[in-house]
Amino acid sequence: MKRRNLLIIPMTIIVMIALLSGCVAVQPVASEPAANVQETGEHEHEMDMTQEVGTVNFPISCTSEAQDGFNHGMALLHSFEYAAAIESFNTVTELDPSCAMAHWGVAMSLVEPLWAPPTSQMLVDGWAAVEKAMAAGAKTEREQAYIDAIAAFYKDSDTLDHRTRSLAYEQAMAQLVQDYPDDTEAKLFYALALLATADPTDKSYTNQRQAVAILEQLLAEQPNHPGVAHYLIHSNDYPALADQGLDAALRFAVIAPAAPHALHMPSHIFTRLGYWQESIDTNLAGASAAKARLPEGDEQRTSSQAVLHPMDYMMYGYLQMGQDEAAKDLLDEMHAIESVHGENLGAAYALAAMPARYVLERGQWAEAAALTLHPQGLAWEKFPQAEAVLVFARALGAARSGDVEAARQELDRLHALREEMLTNKQDYWAGQAVIQSREVEAWIALAEGSDEAALALMREAVALEDATDKHPVTPGPIVPAHELLGEMLLELNQPEEALAEFEASHVVEPNRFRGLYGAARAAEIAGEVEQARSYYEELVALAETSSSERPELTAAKEFLAQ
Image (cartoon, rainbow, N blue to C red; front, side, top):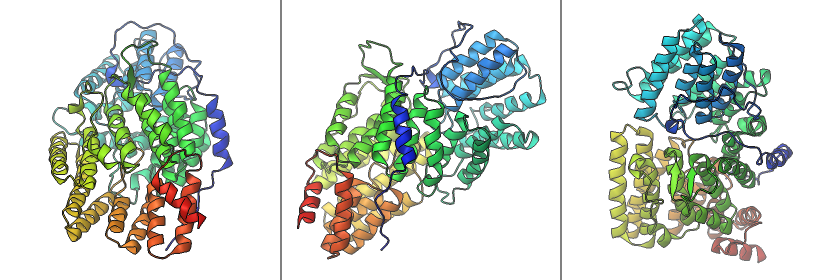
């Protein structure tokens, strides 16, 4: 069997973390979702362009003052600081009312391509921005090509589905790159379009590799461009590609330290590689920067996606290192939140995932079965894919506690949520709900004594999960399917088969606490003493800073003391 070594953290990461520690105090740009930005028509004619958000040079045929503001707005857009970007582009339209590209910038800022399809209001606002760009009139054929490309995304949104329009935009950007081969921004937005239209079941990563080829060439030419580093991270946010994204991860946070999202983004690569403390540190920086722009003295205890998304990544990291007290503090902070500014998928997913992770990673099945959605005032009905995460945790907790009736009730709810996802054309998330359902059905079958049926259902879940990839909104599955199958095989006294599943899980989700313990326990029962010792040593080293009393860690230390 293939063994894996403990990860060696490159010195460059340690240096980057040190740099990040000085970034937290930088006053961040606003980073609320664009869906919540209302155009008031009242803007100051000056923008704070002293913030460190990287260097963008996107020549347009507007006034020189408008050009500077446009470049600043583009830097914000490339860091996914959508609201701040819209504010900048709106100010540009006041500086130069004839600047059609400023309206194009607003339309681009309402797409949010890697998160979720735009809401109906975002589509309306985006098309209005396109119409304003057309009315202002492009001054060059190149600018007209940009406006036509984004128009292809918004046009007929009432009759054409999101993927069809996304592919039309991707094709338009491909043509723009062909017509203007020296246009850096065209190449960047084409690469981003490739990521947005990538098939999550394509394990050859065709679109992602094509985007990487474009972006790596641009990185050598424009090392301080925020979009280049940012999109390289997303392009490589996959187990098979993660190593290639490390350099970009180290660059992005330093390029744009005033952007909370840029401070968080390195953790996408760190998570894929199992660098938990490094992920925690970058997310502490990102969350801190995002909190700094929340209203002071907010009595409503309001949070936002910009805070909650890195908190979910932090929760994941803390739990892998056995830092349960820190994880509990984070959960308490989440439970104190009463409302969310800019309700969107990123916020809803984090609010559902954090409590689910906290109980499932610690094997607290009864606690899992009793989870409730928080805050109750959130419009959960808009995010069935987020609610499904918590329902899955309840169902799995009930099944593993032996409460089959409760597990079946939660399974019914999971099925209902999947139907909502299908109705909303959220096909990817509906597929994730199928995986979750199979896992719950498997543990229900095991609780009922149907061992073979249980294993068959779990193996089906594994195959389905292997055939797809995670969404950028999450650091990883709430529970990896291979890991769940390994735990089931252990319960059925099949340690050799269990070990194979844990080791398969390590390839995709490395350095996980439960994965290492499962492999160690399976090797121990199978009589593979040295292999068990090696895995237990990895587990103890991983949890070196833990003050937890997890029984797995106690068992590891007792074995090593023999």
